[in-house]
Image 1 (cartoon, rainbow, N blue to C red):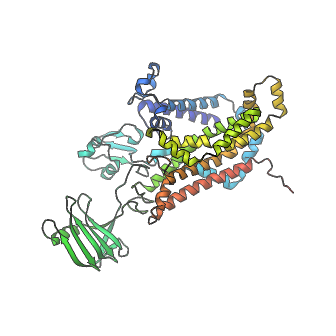
Image 2: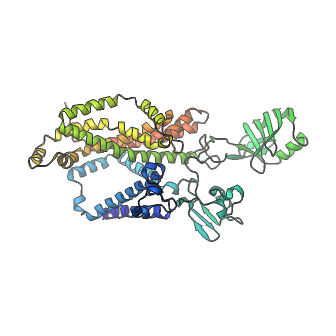
Image 3: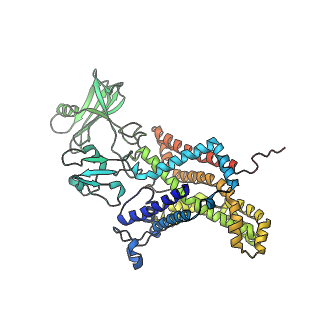
Length: 536
């Protein structure tokens, strides 16, 4: 029954992904292969290069064929069909694997780490349903819109916005604040975190202040120390003063409606010592008009936590910290999903070939691997980044370099296992019966390498996450359009006056690596055949 449910879910996901591509929808996670195909030009065909018999697979709003996305959907549907056709008995795990699985479940630290990591991956799969600047649902003039789930950009004039905002994409956060007002949408539902992980600067958070006993204080708190402002009707600063213990103390500056500085003064313990005014009227009228507006404290980016609706604050670029960490988690998951299949495919293939054939091929391959191991990875990345066109730089290039240089350690382990397995009697029997090398490696050697693959997988995930973070920290990682914990860590260490930057990046990175490491240790112990052996 579980097999049939999984098969149905895979086939349904493939059908939904293909339908969404043809209808212009953007579904969380399911549409990722098509999104990757749009980001990397070589994973798709332009409208002019699409053959006539494949025109029905092109996106109606673009005319291009994103073959990588269709290949992923076909693979999903094929796996689901295979599971559906196979019997329940044929898919049962062998007794040895069932014992290993039971042994893994008995290791609570690794088992609960796997459940927690799975929950994080499920949250990351929800994508724009949880984090994003586009509204999930908008009801306007009796019509329903779902901006977060469509590729098309809906202009602001559709929802009643005027001026420059009418022809640009609708500002859904602003619409959510004005929902229900005349000429505005009736209902706007935003994601839990209404900000994109990158390229979405939030306005400066504003904290209201109050005058109490002649002192400027935070609401319900103590007299403030630092800068306080008065804002005009457009939300621009018209007067800024520095306070100490609730009294003006230090430099004061003022601006008129044209954003020209017209007032400057110096205060000490609430008394104005000198001033300069070059605007219309006199300084007292300017101050009287400015001080008629409520005092506020503007938190410039990076803003601290719990200000302006930002639970963890903002980054130096104005991005919501929680949204940025969420985007970094998605980047790491995508990196692991790309890195593991490529690295394991190369490592398993080279290791089996070296171990099975041996001789000169084995010696030549080992010497080549030793040469590759001596290449300084950072300099390779720097040189290739300068040589390739700017359109090819990005996450795909970094992962490709990591994959091309990350399979060598695995190949030695697989080679040793293949050398051992090819001397077994069942391999000799298969060779006598006429089986070829490829058949022997696929049917007799590869199944016995499962322990190596399962044991190395968690540690490979931890390695690629740490490598990406290191490259981003040094400035050679993914582009600014992708969230990166390594870049956030670099930003935090350069801004020690904003400790939430480095603490958030460090916590996210360490917790993820701990979870993966705990899983890897549990898997390694569960697959150890000498678990109950003792050496004297």
